[in-house]
Amino acid sequence: MMPPDSRLPDDMIPHQPPRGALERRLGVLFVGRVNAGRSLMAEALLRHHASHRFDAHSAGLAPAAAPNPHVMERLAMEGIATAGLAPKPLNHFMAPGAPPVDIVITVSELAATGMAGAWPGQPVTAHWALPNPDPALYPDASVDGRTLVDAIFQDLQRRIDVLAVLPARCLVALSQWDDDDDAGLRTVG
Image 1 (cartoon, rainbow, N blue to C red):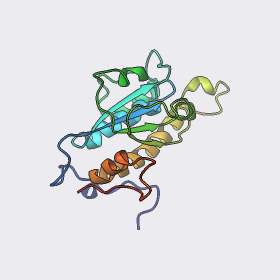
Image 2: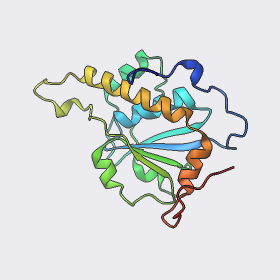
Image 3: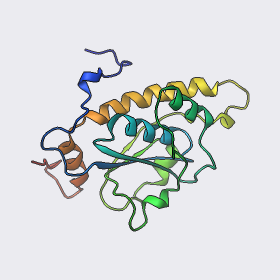
Image 4: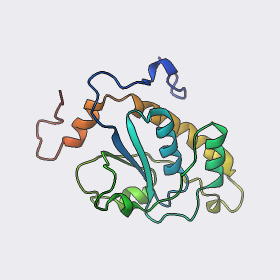
């Protein structure tokens, strides 16, 4: 058994789509309050580790003007692409012609409560409770922004590792489940 703080070994993370995989990549949207830290980091990590299975996006309820500089620094330090990574409004993903969203993951309490019942269709939804890395929230210097971003990065890395190896049929089954299914989740295939 692996310790809870360790990453999955690289040989356990599939780098090629398995036989019988979905015809298209699943759309994942990470939603934060301002889309400057946690949600952007999650988008970049999922693109980096599983772009063959997922189309990763992020958005915010009230997008910031720019990304958190500590987040961008940490991603660059890890060799993770940051080109084009910028805060985006949530309504961009709810408009006609928006990229398909199969999974919505909120990363802030405000996003989780602000989106309750608001999402069109039946995407899989989850909430990943993570601290806010915004340095403005810690004016007394009681929290170092880089240290907090490092901790959030490690937490997101573990969560992305798990998401990246979930069988597509399980994710599709979750997105097709509704309250009328008293038999529970439907299986696909």
